[in-house]
Each structure stands twice: as C-alpha cells, then as structure tokens.
Length: 370
Figure 1 (cartoon, one colour):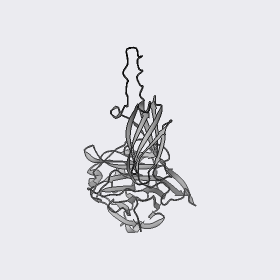
Figure 2 (tube, helix red, strand yellow):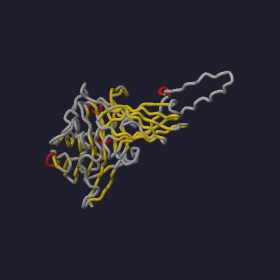
Figure 3 (spheres, rainbow, N blue to C red):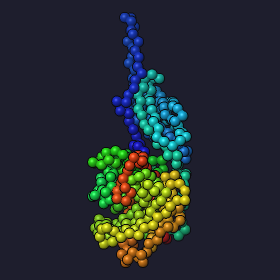
Figure 4 (spheres, rainbow, N blue to C red):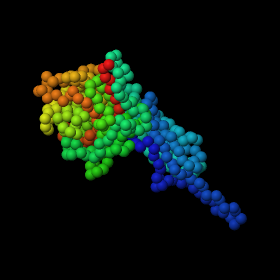
C-alpha cells in the first residue's frame, strides 16, 4: 500500500509539444497551458479480485488517461473526470502510467505501482458482530481513511536491542507503513533504509487509550509470509511502564514466523525478571497458508482462564495451574499490532524473501459478558 494521495513531481513531466514555423505575417501561437497540481488516489476493490481504481485530479486538465501495464499487454483507459478502473487477472506487481491532458499530445504524466494479491475481504473465515450474553465493549472496523488516533498510537524506531529481539526493522509513524483504506488496516514491511536499518515497518498500540480486562477478542486478519517476516497480534499488561516486562504479562494472540506460513502460535509470557517463562501452543492449517485468505484469531479471557482459538477452533489454554503460581493476567491489557523483520526467533531475510510484505486486518472486536 502507499500514501492515499500522490502528486506528480516535475521530473516526471512528459510533453508532446510541437510548434509550427511562423511566417512574417502569421499571428503568434498561444502557448499550451499544461495541467498542474497533478494528484491521484488509488483504491483496491473490497469485493472484486484484482480490480483497482485511480481517481485523478489536476488544474487545467481537459481529460485524463491511464496505461495499465498488464501481463497480457498494455490497456489504455481515458476518462473526462479522472476516474479509471482496471481488473488484473493474475497476482503480481504492475506499473500504471497516469496522464493529465491539455490535449492528446500535451500532458503531464507520472507512474505508480499496484500490488495484486488475489485476496479480497470476502475470502476466508469471519465471525458475527454479536454474541448471546455479551456486549460489544469496543471495536475498530477500519472503515475510514486514516488510523483512529483516539484509539491507536505508534511505536517509532528500533527500540532497545531491536525491541529486545535483535530485530532489523525501523518502525515509522507514516502512511508508507500503516494505512487504513478500503475497509481494512494494512501494515507493510518494506526493504528500505531508515534510521540506520535496512527495513521499515509499523507497530501500533492502544496503550493508555483502549485497555481491557477480560472478554472475547476477535481479530480478523490476513498474514504475510517469507523468511525473516514476523507478524504479531498481541497484548501487554497496562502496568508495563511501572513494573516492566515480563512482570506485566504478555498475551500473544497470534504470532507467525514467515518460513512457516501455515502455522501460528499463541503464547503467554510471565515472570519476575527477563527472560520470561512462557506457555505456548501452535495451530496449523490442513492446507494453504495464512496469506491465502482471512482468518479470525480469538482470545477468550476470563478470571484465571485464557483460551486461544483460530476460526473458532481452540488450540491452547492457560490457568494459574500451569504458570507455577505467577499469574499477571487478571488485570487490564492493551493491544499491539506489528510486523517485525528479522530477530532471534524467525531469523533474518534472505534471497528468497519478497518485499513488500503486508498484514491486512479487517477488524478487532472486544466483547464482554453482560
């Protein structure tokens, strides 16, 4: 994904201007007024696989066009109002040339890319918006066009010791790595240098804004894959800033290490000092990977009981009876969503790792008992 609004740079202007010779009695030829302030937005269809729509705007443009560089050949679409669409039949990354025209031969142009995954929000498992005996305490359906900063904040940088795991990414707060559009949140890990590191990504959290004690938590997401790619949907105890980790407790609703794209892990971390004690279990798909469609990762959390589910199938249980008497899980926790790149557990990217990699989140919902 990329920033929602983009602007053509002067270095990308391409002119097709030809002036005729003037005789001594010819009148001066008025100069062509080229379009300026060329911007556009890119939207992916939530229901039609492979369909993208560009909406272009420019001052002094008489019409617009786009050349979609599809695998089967170039497809040119013209539009008087700047709205053009095309449906790609196959997955991949494609170039699109965008033009704002004064005339057929006189225009400004720029290039953008689209990434077609072949997966829409309609693909995969989903859960209901209500349950008998529960109220909806909070939800983010990611239905707007920006991250809701009343619920979320950003962690920025590489932390201490690569966030304690020798991770290789630099987390940013910009829309290059975290976008809300088309009914979903997209966190993107990129191979690009920033802050002295070779990769960028995003890590968002609800600390101090949305914190909860107990409930059913449903998170519907499609996960990235690849050697060294490490997405996570997890929680930390709200007293993290005062007691530190692992004393605050950590509940990993979902973690995936990218070289095992068909398996996720649910883990509880606890203890009086680092390194933590942990109780973990994993869930594997019978076929395919967690990149192929959306799945729902659920935590059912009560006093002295935590259960982990994938698509409503339970695979892990935690109680004080299997934590050795240390149990910091009966307090409020906050959410963290991120993609790490590299680290002690997943290892590091290699020649097989494809960038960018994305985690798409359709919704997060917290239900609490009436």
